[in-house]
Amino acid sequence: MRRVVWLPAVLVLTAVLAAGCARPTLYSWGQYEELIYRSYAAPGAVSPEMQVENLEADYQKARSENKPVPPGFHAHLGYLYFQLGKLDQAQQELETEKAQFPESAVFIDRLLANLRKN
Amino acid sequence: MTGCGGLARAIGYAAAVMLAGGCVTAQPYDYTNYRLHPPRSIVVLPPLNQSTAVEATYGYLTTVTRPLAERGYYVFPIAVVDQFLKENGLPSAGEMHQVPVEKLAEILGADAVLFVTVEQYGTKYLVIDSVTSVAARARLVDTRTGLVLWEGRRVLQQSSSSGQSNLVAMAISAAITQVLNTSTDAAHRLSPQLNLLLFNQKDQGLLYGPYHPRYNQPPE
Image (cartoon, rainbow over all chains, first blue to last red; front, side, top):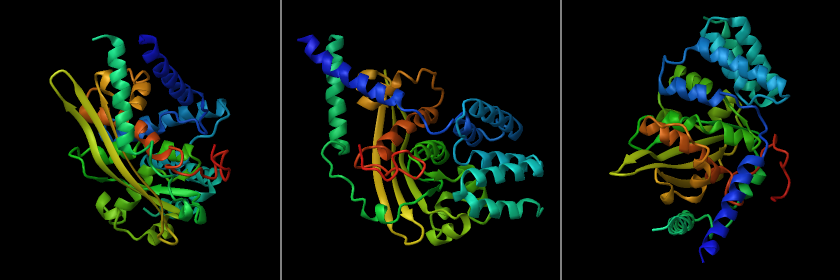
C-alpha cells in the first residue's frame, strides 16, 4: 500500500523538477536582479563600483556562453556609470541597450538627452 | 506517523491549496484584448504594498524582470525607471500608480504597464515552525487604449517543515539551501515561485512575447 502512495508523488515531483531544470533560459542572468535587490535591501552596502564590477564580469561570462544579457542590463549598467561620473561609458551602455532592444529607444533617448545636462 | 503518511498529507494539502487557488478548475483566461493589443515591452512599476513589511515593494519588484523577460517581453530596467520617476516628482509607488498610462507611453515608450499589488509578504514564526507567505495581484494595461490585457492573483505559502508546503514550493525547496537570515529575505526567495504560478500557468498566465520562440504559436 505504501508504494501506491509514493509512486504518484514521486512521478509528480520528478515531472515538476524536470520541467524546472530542462528549460533553457533566453538570457544569461548573472547577478542582475540580485544586485538590484541588495542595493534596495541595504542601501550603501552595495556600491555602484561593486555593482559595475559584478555586471561587467556577468557580461563577459554571457559573451563567452554566446548568450544575450537580459533586457535592462546595459541600461542599468549605464545608469551605474552615470552615478560614477563616467559619462562616456554611460552613453555607450545606453546605446548598447537601444541597439539590443529597440523597444527601449524612447526611454533611452530621454536618458541620453539628460546625460550631460548637469 | 510514518514518512509516507506525512507525504500523503502533504499531497492532500497541496491539492487543497491548488483547488483553493483555482488553478485546477478555473476557466481559461479571456485573452481577447491581449491578442488584439499584443505588447512588445512592459514597464513594471514599483508595487503597491498592502503587506505589513515595508520591504515588500522592492523585495518583490526585484523578482519580476526575469519571468517577464523569459516570457519574451522587453522589460524596462526597474531601478532606472524607479529613479527616473522619483526624480520627476513621483517619490512613491502610490504616486507612480496614479500616472495615466498614456503618459507612461509618452515618457518611456512602453506598450504595457504591469501594476502589481503585494498583499502578503513575510514570515510568521510559530513555536516549532515558520510560515513564509507571498501573495500578489497584477494587472497588465495597454498604454495606448487603457484596456486591461490580463489580470492575475496568486497566493503562495511555504512552511519550514516540508510536509506542510505546497507542491511547487516543495519541488523548489530542494534548490533553496541557503540559510535565510531575515523574515523578508525568505519572502523574497519565495517570490520567484509565486511568479511562476502567476505569470507562467497555462491558460491563466501571460501569453508569450516577441522574444520567445513560441511567440504567436498556439499553446502547447
